[in-house]
Length: 100
Image (cartoon, rainbow, N blue to C red):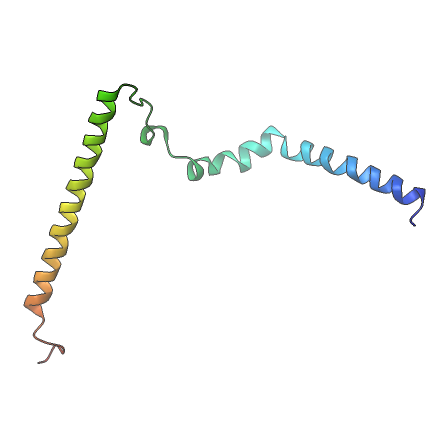
């Protein structure tokens, strides 16, 4: 096989790689330069997160009703916009071809 020199080399490599990785990636300057700029891409800003989660049943039901009302309002706006687009397309279109 490889002999004792190969084993000493492998042992040194197995110790060297994690220590160098720790020193390189554990440096605070590296963290501030490479990790913190991407924090906004990975996590939402604090104002978009729910900091006050309802704990009792009535608060949960109120929050659920509010969310359903918002969803229904968005759906109605979207349907109204689609209807307006369909009406505009029906008025401007005369047939399969525009010149007919």
